[in-house]
Amino acid sequence: MEKIKFSAELDVFQSKSELPKPIQILMNKAIVARDKAYAPYSNFKVGAAILMDNNEVVSGSNQENAAYPSGLCAERTAIFYAGSKYPGMPMKALAVTAKSLSKEITSPIPPCGACRQSISEYEVNQSTGIPIYFMGETGKVYKAKSIKDLLPFIFDKLNL
Image 1 (cartoon, rainbow, N blue to C red):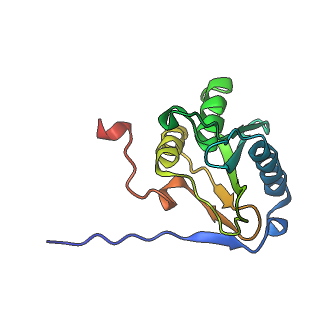
Image 2: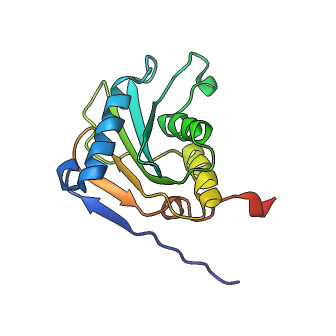
C-alpha cells in the first residue's frame, strides 16, 4: 500500500477592501447578483460573477424551485451563461458571495461539489486556472488559484 498526500494553498484577504481593485469590482457585481437571487425556500442567497478574457463580466444568482433538484446554483448559472454567451473564451476570475436571510454569514462560502465539477470542465477546456474568490456576506475573502485547490481529483474528459 502507498499513500497519496495532497494539499491546497489559499490566499486569505481580511476583507473585500484588500482585494485588487478589478477583483473588488468583480465581487461587487457578485453581490449585486446575490441580492437578485430567487431563494424563497432556503433564504440563502448566492451571487457569482465571472471576468471574461474580453473584460466583460457575466453574473448569475441561485435560482431555487419547489422541486429542489430543479434549481441551480449561482456559480453554474454564471458559468453556463458565460460558456453560452462567449463560447471558448477564457475566464480570468470568478467571484462568489453568499448571504443568509436568517443570520449573518461571515465565513467564506466555497462552491458546492456540483459547481466545482462544472468549473473544472471550463478550466480544463481553457488549459489555465480560473482564480476563485469567495466570501460570505462580510469578512474574509479566500482565493483559490485554480479549481484544483478545491477539487484535487477532478473528473474530466481524459477519464472517459
